[in-house]
Length: 289
Ligand code: PDD
Image 1 (cartoon, rainbow, N blue to C red):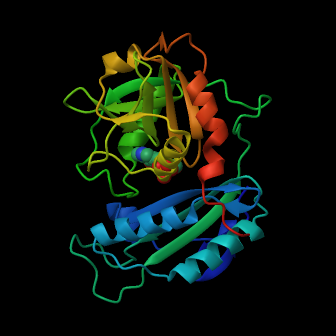
Image 2: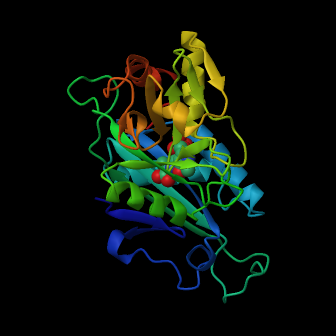
Image 3: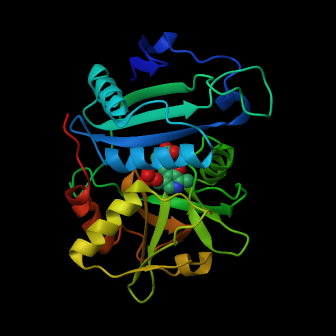
C-alpha cells in the first residue's frame, strides 16, 4: 500500500495527494512516466530510467522539472517513507495544468510531478519456490499511435488489450502490427527462442518502447555470450517458438507458456528463459539506498 505520495514538491498522505482538474495529463494524456523496480529497498537501473525520462520529455518538448540529484533524492525518500523493500516506484511528469486548450500552456507553467512507490508480492529470479509458472498471452491488433518509443501515459490501447486478454483467460497481450509482426507486449517487450534455438526480440523503432529491462538483458547476453537476433517475428513464428518471455520493470523476465491458447514449447517456462531470469540482477544497476 502506498502511504506517502510526492506531489508537486510536497510529501502528502495518499488520500490527500491531488492534481488539478485541468491537468494536461488528465485532459490530453500530455504526460510521461517511468516505472522502476525496487529490490531490497534499492532502485534498479535508476540511471537508465532517468535517461529515458529525459528522452521522453525531450521528444514532447517538455523540460525536465528536476535535476538528477533532486530526482534521486525524491525517489529514495519515497521508497523509504513507504517502507518498500521489494516493489516498484512510479513517477509521472505532465506539462502542468492550465485552462483546456490544445496549444501548449504558456512558458513557465509549472509541470506536475508525482512520485509514488508500493510493495509488490512477486515471484522473482531463479528462486525455485517463487519462480513464476509463466503467463499466457493473447495477441491483439496494435492500434496505438506511431510514437510508442515515448513513454507517455496514453495507455488506453494497452488497457483495452489487457482486458481483451483477460476476457479470454490470458494474463497479458502482445501487440501485432498491421504488417503481421509482433511489436511488443501490453506493458513489456516480447522475446522468443525460435525453432532454431536462437533468441529473438523485435528491433527498436518508433513502434515500441526501448525497455530498460530489455537494454539490461542485452548486457547479460553479451556477458554470457548468448546470441541474439534483433529482428521482427510474426505470430506464426511465436506460436512455433521453443520458448517465449516478456521483460519489464514490473515483471523483470517472465516466461510465456501459451500464446492464443497454444502452448509454447512444452508449455512450461523454457530453460534459457529461466537461466536469463536468474542472471538478470547481476547486470542491473542497483542503486545505493
Ligand atoms: N511498462 N513496452 C511497453 C509498452 C511498456 O509499457 C513497458 C513498461 C515496456 C518495458 O519497459 P521497461 O523494461 O523499461 O519496464 C515495454 C511499465 C512497466 C508499466 O507501464 O507499468
